[in-house]
Image 1 (cartoon, helix red, strand yellow):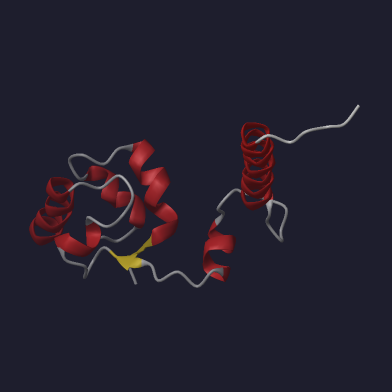
Image 2: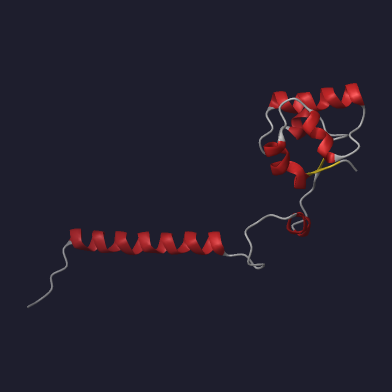
Length: 114
């Protein structure tokens, strides 16, 4: 019995091999981390040399680049700072309308007051 490779079979086999390659590549990329952790701790962020946003000097456009901060909330940060003076602690940003614990927890490692 001779095995005959039709173009349809070839395309199906090639598609399966390609799909398996993509699955393997995505799993490898998602799980690859030299430290063994996918959690972004302050130390890990610091080692990545990410420039933090100074909430005492940044304008609304820069602040709106933070995760979960809309343009209007960024403007609220600037307005709060102008009304109350510089932030003395990063947690004070939770006093700004539109920034609660959830948003604060997602941005706290990306902001500074220095």
